[in-house]
Image 1 (cartoon, rainbow, N blue to C red):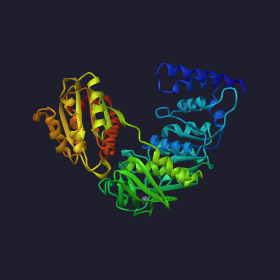
Image 2 (image 1 turned 180 degrees about the vertical axis):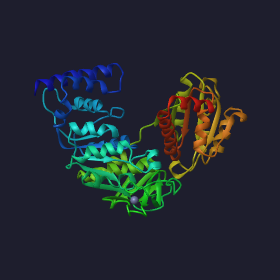
Image 3 (image 1 turned 90 degrees about the horizontal axis):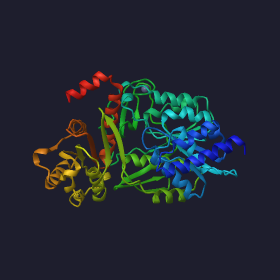
Length: 465
Ligand SMILES: [Zn+2]
């Protein structure tokens, strides 16, 4: 082994141990140090991957998709390098390779599954040669409005243009991905759901104002699954869903996910349409890698979702936590967590009873909602929404919040606005599955608008609320 690579590995591995001792899960630091010692450390270690590196990117679902792919590869008995959630910059990816590498003896792996942000793709492609790049989707609202690809999409396309030997694995139902194959010159494989009216999809509410990436004309939707995902057609240039190489049929969400790819019956403990896409993406990639169907099925059936999904946004300086709740245990956990954080809080609870949420909402009476009214949570006002928002409001009232301080709103956007305008310093948005994606979209958009606006505007906006 070359001395510079050895030194980078030695110091890098020591840094991994040190940062673990310091309690840091964040793993950028070892990679950063090692890259300083040997800037080529990542490309040298990438040479240890025998069957292929798969990069997973896109706006939503890359963590879930790459975790399921890793589970399938492990089920297959193959050796794997996989970067963990929260370490998806080039430094974090370098750390993953350093942790896996042998110090005194070269260690080989079958695959690497690398999750990364869109913006990181050009850097990564400079250093490693993946076998395939999987793109889950692009969700950006400004795209919808202007009908042209954002900087992120351009960046990925440009980075892929001169890398003709990379295959693309793309979501056939996302119109933002429809021209990737033509624009980059790379061969693409597509995955998508067979046309059907699925229960749990947004059913045509969400596809308004989506424009063709080729000619800019507004798209016609025959079916809308959620956001811009669905079966589309451009009346002006005839752009439409590419033919899928991996088509999923008979999707059921009861609330757990089941569907078929050819004769392969997939069952997963995950819930929600967005996760059905993640599972399909992982299964399609596994098929592409030549992994046998029984291995794919088993791994997906056994792979459990991570508990306590949570996402943080900062809007107008106010930290805002979006948290998935679906049962008494999870709900209690979140409320208990709130009591441990000091300061007044704004609380918004969205309760739906769509198939993906579970039809029975009586679990709210099993949860310790009384915690909400305790002084420790710092909650004085509760805003409720969702198909069963009134049930939640009643539950909160019985928990001890005065009726005057409980508001039921009819839509998520005004609910979130009202919540953020409350007296608290932090906002907590708790919602069931079928509201999660919509809340996430609204919050991302608000956060982006705040970041894009000049400071004067931000202040006046804050004042006007
Ligand atoms: Zn068009």
